[in-house]
Image (cartoon, rainbow, N blue to C red):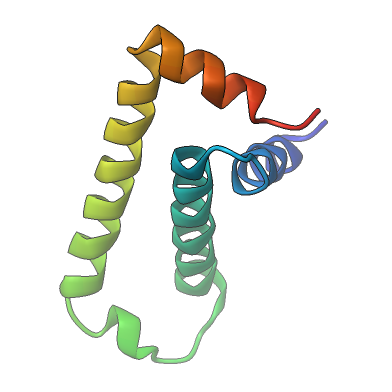
Length: 88
């Protein structure tokens, strides 16, 4: 499996998990990924990149998602429920 496939698989597992926190993390990853793709491949002048506000918002979203993932990881009951909510 290529690196790109792994990233897509992780996002999909999170988005389709039944745990609401994992779903939220998955949705944030999807939005950040779409914005990154736009920044890398869309050659038009896009309003989202006209100021630093969008970049600061993206950093905050990523930071919040990581903090949520850390909170899940550090709580054994929450971690078990999150793992169980991921479909094989």
